[in-house]
Amino acid sequence: MKPVGKVLCATGIIAGVLVFFWKDSFNPESLSGARVLLTGASAGIGEQMAYHYARFGAEIVLTARREAVLQKVVEKCLTLGAKKIFYIPADMSSPSEPEKVVQFAVQKLGGLDYVVLNHIGMTRFQMWDGDVEYTRWLMQVNFFSYVALTTAALPILERDKGSLVVVSSLIGKIPTPFTTSYSATKFALDGFFSSLRHELVMQKRNISITLCILGLIDTDTALENIRGKVLHLTASPASEAALAIISGSATQVQEVFYPWWLQHVCYLWVLFPCNRDQVLRSYYNYSSL
Ligand SMILES: NC(=O)c1ccc[n+]([C@@H]2O[C@H](COP(=O)([O-])OP(=O)(O)OC[C@H]3O[C@@H](n4cnc5c(N)ncnc54)[C@H](OP(=O)(O)O)[C@@H]3O)[C@@H](O)[C@H]2O)c1
Image: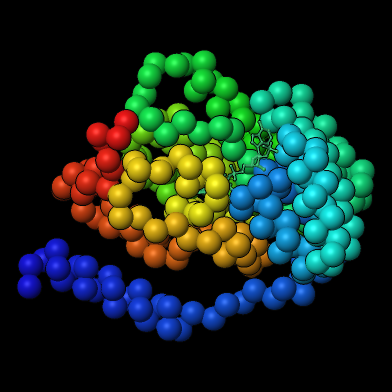
């Protein structure tokens, strides 16, 4: 067997053993009464997270831009068992909104156990077209607003021994074509929050940070974006992705990978730099753009 084959075989065996012996330490009861601020909660993975938190009996503040849609999510959360639930419409492209949202959540819930940063601005899936203003805007929505929300929430999270949950993407670990600006915002999240995690540990401040690395998920916006452009990829269910984020952050792991095997994709990416870009590009339909 070639050396590459041996390494792949060994990685597969180790992964299999880990999965076999893996014990899920997540206790859903730990979320009963937990105070959660959740962004991007009107659709997709954020909406599914709202329903899971509601089922677990959490106290929740939801935010996104569309008030009417948030109201519908709130109604469903109440039927599912949310202990308390509020919403605040906010556009994260406005630099003043993050602080307002955190203040609202603290006022309504009296504290914060989880701040789940999940929203994203409209993502263009296309070749770089030189639109610097769009990249600046997307950085504001996908990155700077995360930093501002975190800055406003840190003192409360420290007091309440809470957790920051940052939803990112495989595209924030492995750059892919047609995602220049989006990929940049997700790499920025990894850099900022992985550095901040070190600093919190060094200062013995009791706040955990979980960075969530997701693959393709079957949300309407993601499927619409990639239609006809990405080949041979199956989207995973948003509800399962949402649960993986919630359980991983409740057990305070540093990084959640969903699906789980993405972690091995990241290892292989680093271990085998030769030909990896060529293999990656074969998943993309260039002629459709
Ligand atoms: N779906 C995937 O394949 C995939 C893969 C990897 C990672 N992820 C990550 O998972 C997270 C959720 O993705 P998703 O697919 O569930 O997205 P989505 O379905 O497009 O939902 C995005 C959410 O963000 C809100 N939003 C959009 N613009 C906003 C703004 N300017 N200010 C405040 N809120 C805004 C939207 O609500 P309003 O329109 O009401 O504002 C919505 O609730 C993102 O961080 C994404 O990067 C997703």
